[in-house]
Image 1 (cartoon, helix red, strand yellow):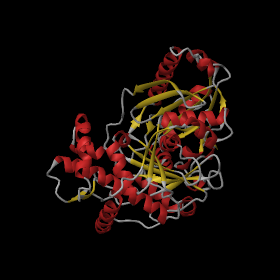
Image 2 (spheres, helix red, strand yellow; image 1 turned 90 degrees about the horizontal axis):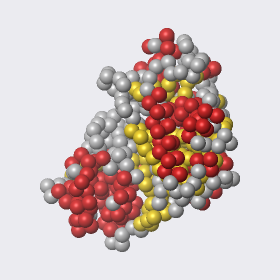
Image 3 (cartoon, rainbow, N blue to C red; image 1 turned 60 degrees about the horizontal axis):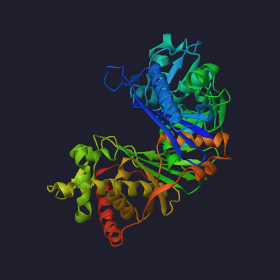
Image 4 (tube, rainbow, N blue to C red; image 1 turned 90 degrees about the vertical axis):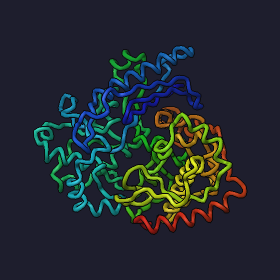
Length: 485
């Protein structure tokens, strides 16, 4: 059996086809032709037709690659799609977009977010988050208030992945737990709250909500013919990109934690209870099992290396890292202003304590700074009540450096496990398999994920890094608004 996962992101789409054991048979990518159709500062829009064109191109590339292996697209049993969290578009009765989509990073709805916050205290307290302009619900309210001529024609409110699912199945009125979260869905009661009526929003345009991995329907006849699928191929509910990226690491059972360090850092852990972060920097998604995926997304991450070093030189600098660590340098290498996890501080800025005039030391110190921030995040999760074990599943661009993995393992004093195949598209494929092959998501992940590296803390470094981290923590307390769980 084969499964297709499609990741629709900020800059393009990616796809992967694998079997029930996680063996990858085909992959494909396609970049978007225009990343932002808006010309106003702080506004980010994209054309949904572009998403579909890119997704279609990715599917065709994957199918062509699959055929070269001797397998057939008719063997694909299930398809799942993810999208960016908080991205929405309104459709008319013909399922055509009424305007370009408002993207997850579009911050125009700050006034609407504050209005929602004034009425959503009970829901925010229950779910452990605070509505802000990046959420989908404020964007919907902005359209209603600022573009009533658009809102009045709306028959469907869909998220990024919902639109692709609609094009594949003809069903536009269903979404999943994780996409629905930032649209205001009450994940505890599994209902759209009365808050919608309080805000004057039409509940009718909001979709039905099901768990990720649940079958939505069969692929349409037209899509089956276009891509060579069997008419029996099903499309299952996907999730947001961060959600499925965590799934791709194998962090799907209680006590599992995923740390994804690419451009930025994302932490997700599986808990039995829904924990509330009093500092407001983290929140929980709901898993198909009914357990919760607790964590957050930071502004710190691997791009700090790009801020000071050429990507082509990374390998050269990596080779000298172990000779200069620990560097004795303390830093929080933020890119730009503001931090959102593990603390909320819109005025937070990067800082460095120590001598970084030697570029080799500077390079290693940036790696250490991210590792200290990662430890801070895990300690914040523990302050909120979550249990963090001795194994951390990890992926992202930072995992390309074995030296950085050893620094992180030593700072955390925990084992790091790096999966063979990761990413949002792989997470989607695992969800697809859980829908049509395996009993549940943990069983699918257990069969489909293997690990290429297991990194232990470096003997002798853990105690040194523990002392340095305590210094780093004191520096954070002096400079930032550290929230308490």
